Amino acid sequence: MSTTRHLVNRRRRLATVAGTTAPPRTAGTPQPASRAVEALEPASPQAPEPSEPPEDAADTEDEEAAGDGPPRGRLPRLRIRLPAVLCAATLLLGAFAAWSFTSAGTLRDDPGRRNAALTDISRTSEVKGQITEAVGAVFSYDYASPEKADLAARKHLTGKAVQQHEDMLAEVRAQAPKQKLVLTTTVTQSGVEVLDGDRARLLVFADQSNTRTDKEEETTYAAAMFAVDALRRGDTWRIAAIDTFTR
Image 1: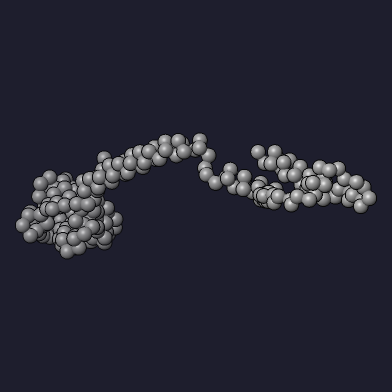
Image 2: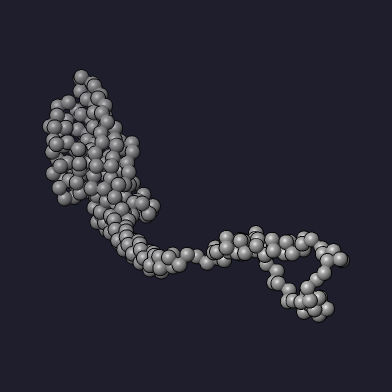
């Protein structure tokens, strides 16, 4: 220990100082024979004492020796923690890979990814233009030429939209000859909601004017909003269903 070394060094220094400060003997004092013989004999050279390092240096060396290496108790912990960390990282990477694969599959199966209305500008414009024209034709009626409305229905309607259209215009057809009605529908805005292959769904906004041309001339205006399902036959898009959002 550093304390014991300090005590030994201090005692050596005190002994050296005491020997050099001994009082000199006077010339008249007789010396014993043994002392005289020792005085005549040449002094044998003494081996120099090894110089002791300063106390501060010894303390510093002890502290450095004590602080060089890591405590032995930490090495097993490091050896145990490293495999645990690697195992946790492996599990995290595996979970991330599984999540990525599942997310990619979900995106591939998402109907929005198959919606050509988001990507195919040409076909979207095509169905929008044809359905806009069809809505304006089938929802307009002139008492003077009812055959024109019938022709528009046969041209632009298919499936259950045929019966839906007849039900919606039944009152107009009944009152038209008597009141000389002219119904005009103008599409103001439309948008393709879904376009998947030969099927599409559109949202339509329209203005309608209903004019009586008999003695009681009167015009009423109304706004209409409805959705239509469209079906493509060849190069022509037809209205297959009409949804007026009524229950």
